[in-house]
Length: 371
Image 1 (cartoon, rainbow, N blue to C red):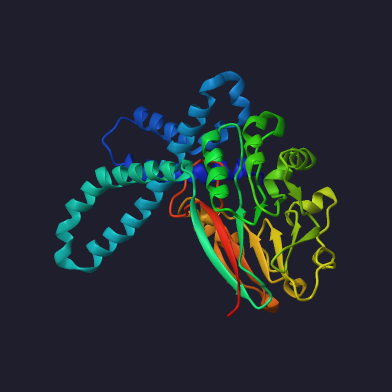
Image 2: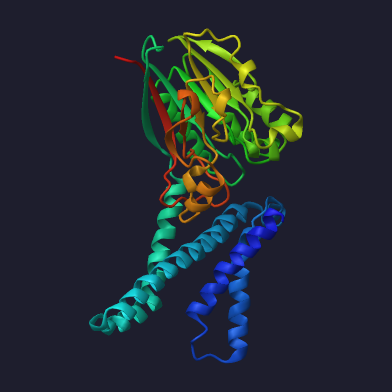
C-alpha cells in the first residue's frame, strides 16, 4: 500500500466518523446529507492535494494554499481525537452514575460547540508551535572519558522545503550560533525538496559556526529527494559528511556517522559501525550520528548515539503510532552494552508545519567529565 493510499484511507476514516457523529442526526434532507458526506470525504483527502506540483498553478499563493489545507486536515484530526475522548467521558458519566445523568444536556452542548472550539484553538496553537523558532533543549552527559566540558548542538529534521519560512531557518542558525558550540551535528532530514529549488534557503546553513566543524549525515527524506544531490548541496554550504567515517575533536571525543539505515541499503550503502570507529582510540568518548534511532545491539561500540526522525510524534495522537513504529520516541534511553541514545524531537517537521504536544527543539548536549 502506497503512502498516498494509506493517507487517504486514514483521512477519510477520520472525517467519515466526524460526519456521522456531528451531522447524521441533524434534521437535514437526504441530498444535503449526501453533499455534506462528500465534503467530509474531501477534507479527509486534503493531504493528497498539497504536492509541490500545485505550485505551477498557484504561484505565490501556493504556500498559503498548502498551510490552509494542512490546517484544516489537522483540525479534523484533533476534533476526531477530542470527540473520541468526549464520547468516552460522557458515556461513563451517563451510564454509570444515575444522579449525573442530568448532565446529558451539557454533553449535547459540548458536542455542538465545545469540541469544535477546542479543536480550533489547539490547531491555532499547533500552527504557532510548528512555525516558531525552536527552543533550546539542554541535555547533560558525563563520562570519565571526557577530559573537558564540550558543547555539541544537535539539529535534526529541519526539513527545508519551498514552503518553509526562510526567517525560521535563519532563526535556527542564529540561535545555534549564539550557543557558541564546539561542534554542530545535523542528524538527517535536513532537506525535503529538490535541492536546486531551495538553494536560497539552504544557503543560510552556510552561516552555522562551530569551533571544530559542522557535520551531517543523511536521513530518509534526504534520500527521497535524491541522495547525491542532497549531499552535494550540503557540502556546498561548508558542511562535512560523516557517513561511514569518523573524526576526532578536542576533549577526547570521536564522532562518526551512518546514513539512514532504513533507506540507505536501496542505494547500495552499507552500515558498518565497526569500520566507523576503527580509528578511534579506546579511551575516546565515541558519538554516533544516526538519523533513525536504533539499538545496534552487540555492535554498540560507541558511548552515545544522537538521532531524530520521530519528531516526538509531532501532532498528538500520532505519538502513539510513532512509538509503535520506532523503538524510541524522544529523550534519553540506555542501549545494549551500556551505550546511551538521545532522540531529538527535531527543529522542523514533515508535512503540516504544525506541532501539538511535541515541541520542536535545538538540542544542546553538554559533555562533562565525570566527577
